[in-house]
Amino acid sequence: MDWAQVHTEFKRKGVTLSLLWEEYRQREPRGYRYSRYCELYGQWRGRTDLSMRQVHRALAPMAQPADHRLSQRKEKHSFALRR
Image 1 (cartoon, one colour):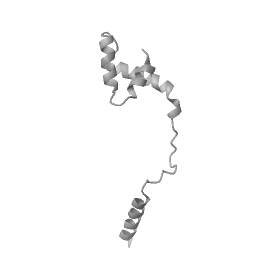
Image 2 (cartoon, rainbow, N blue to C red; image 1 turned 60 degrees about the vertical axis):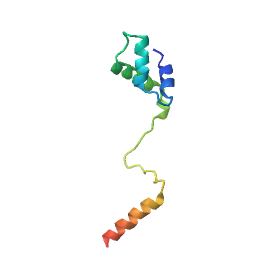
Image 3 (cartoon, rainbow, N blue to C red; image 1 turned 90 degrees about the vertical axis):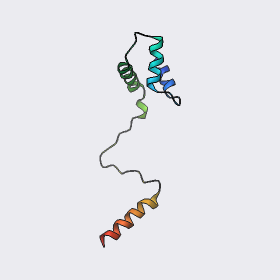
């Protein structure tokens, strides 16, 4: 199985793993069942996409919201309730 080719096709818009599996089964009628196909693809992908891993630490500073006014409104509202 050429998982690199599967991965390239999977990245295209509108392509699902289920669709790729159906095409695979048409070529290989006695091939993998869908669950095994997904499992093998996941194992292959786990070995190749290590560059995207991110470590998230507990209590690390969170990213600021894109709209700071929203967070200011929440703070202003919560302050008004405390009075």
